[in-house]
Length: 390
Ligand code: GLA
Image 1 (spheres, helix red, strand yellow):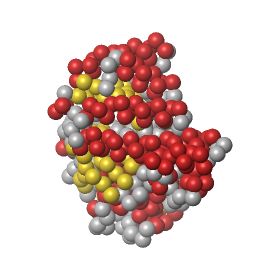
Image 2: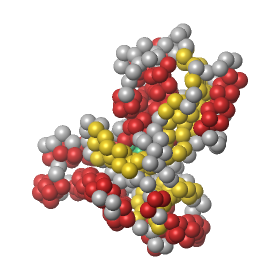
Image 3: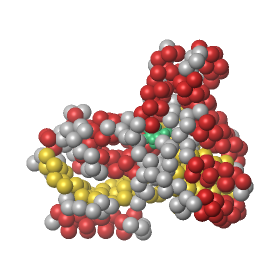
Image 4: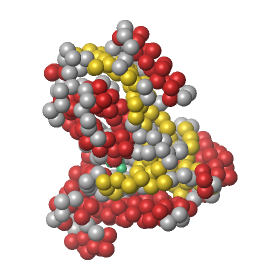
């Protein structure tokens, strides 16, 4: 699926009509994201700074009032799946349909009278690449239902409901970053988000105007959040907060970090997690300050520090991600780090425009030499958040 959003909307609407025998009420889009900085801080009430990708999940949707939910995806082989809205139950569905169905469940559970829908989805967000393909699916469905049922919910409220769908219905213990990024990002900006109260600031982020580029390198190593490691890190952070007597690690000030680490004594595992989260929040604030003062190139070393912290303290990198970072830096990149949940997925590389071909070639050659699957490299420009296309 490519082309202008009008062309995409038309083709998704046409497919809807073939499947369901009538035109949809509308077509919506919601993007995937990359996170510039602020990893594994969101479930610690901390700071994050994602921006939206041009890749989107698109949904053609018609409202129904008879308690039936019908789902179809262009990206998954198979017929239309038909469910009853009053029979939706957390944990009952292990297929892709759990994401859209979970959103409908979360809206109904929050007291919104959503009485059914016909939905056809098509996404260009690479799945399992750490680029929030699931959040894009959730948010596009939430936005469509919000419009069709006149719920009047704001972007951040939809994000909360989508997170609930993923936590409870799907069973993945993710934070709030991805859904908020998909719902609230703006073209040309990165989103500085305080995940405690969801207050936001749009930070202009136009690298091309300054002769730079941001590359996304998808290692093609698939990750999955419902598998234990993400949950273990989250539980470790919560243990750290409890031992330190704070609501969340966000409440440990950077200046107090050494004292906090001493108080954790021989809890070595927890100490490492705490050190990552507290220093990562500080890195987000540093990046915001640098971008706002126009010193964009200086964020490069901060990204590299972030990667080292995720690799050594949080321990969620992998050989492929480390190879991207090391090779890109060796080939002249300004900065690089893994992005997203970890254990595979994607890395980002900040580079001078003129260095992009050499860096791309170096990474591709390094992967071939190591015997890794060929990575997928593309340039990311901050795109728009979720919206109605027609
Ligand atoms: C995944 C989760 C997010 C966040 C990141 C790590 O993308 O969905 O909530 O925790 O990992 O920063």
